Amino acid sequence: MSPRGADRKATRGYGVTPWSRAVCDVVEGRDTGPVDSRRITKARSYFRDRNVRQLSIGSGRVTALVDGSQLDPFEVTVTMRPVHTPTVASLLRSRNAVDDLLALTRGTQPNVLGELLLPTESADIASECSCPDETVRCIHVLAVIYEVAADIDRHATTLLTLMGTDLTQLLSAVESLSGATSTDPDEVPTPLVPTAAPALPPLPDPPRMTPIMDLDIKSLHAALRASGIPAGDVGEAVDQLAELYDALLDPKQK
Image 1 (cartoon, one colour):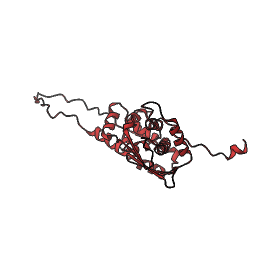
Image 2: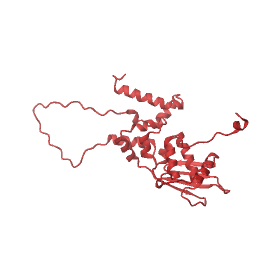
Image 3: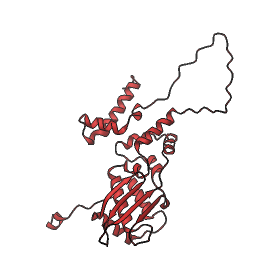
Image 4: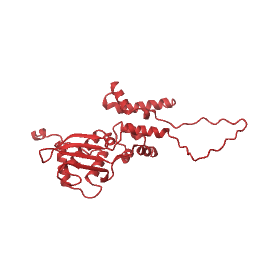
């Protein structure tokens, strides 16, 4: 390796996972036609040079300061059209994808959950910047989004926060749906006619439940870490705990 190569800093990256790439595509306007390559290239250089400061990712809202062509940094605010948590939970159940929430705790980015959370058009994202550029997505807004995308690459749950929800809310919504009844209030019950020595009905066969889904994921992770399990092994420990629950529910399982 040459001396020049040895001094070269590692290139920063973003958009290396499906969820973060999808967010970038919408903000860059790839869903509406040709993009402004010059503007995107400049924003990428801002990202690489760490011009974005004080990045704050809250529920459906992102704020940051971006160093630009003026002495004072520009103020950027990005607001997302939030998802409806109960609707997302209902769709996960209808598509048999509730396990996507458990997969999320292992750092993966499940397809179905991503389809329900990710923005799909530019109208899903509003942005403001204090710079004089009046375009919808100025260089500073793009640079901030690239920082957000890099955070999604590192932590998949960042997308949930970005879209106005979190894992705890989704798990609670799924649990609420599991306990809901489907009784029709307009349905007239058929009167029961007693007969002599009626046969006892068979024992009910309740649906198989996954107890681990009832646990608070954040508290579970904290407990596992406190027990001495390294951060990189927490996902595997969650899997083993799920297998233990399965064994308790079905002693014949091997």
